[in-house]
Amino acid sequence: MALDDNSEPEPDIAVVIIDPFDCATHHPTPSEVYLIIDVADSSLAYDRKIKGNIYARSGIADYWVLNVGDRQLHVFLEPTENGYQSEVILGETTSISPIEFPAFNIAIQAMLPHS
Image (tube, rainbow, N blue to C red):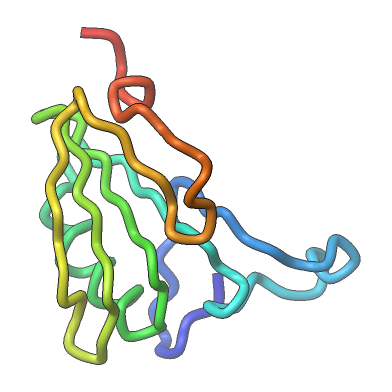
């Protein structure tokens, strides 16, 4: 994904809209990104802080970090130049809907490895 600065972190999962004929010629721009999900085990601090700040500065509205170790989902919303203004931590027994797909409900437990 092309971002505003020189850093180009690679998300584990990106839900994007892009013309299939353009895929070969460019990465999705932030305006074409609906949701980014990173799966964190040992990379939790890096994903939350470093990647989160890059995504926020780029205007990614919906960024999730699946914290495998603690079986939680960190949801980052309201991006600004200084990072996300909102971080909500959800437990594995809850569910969530992406901002762009409010009718699509995802059980957090279904995203985690079996315990």
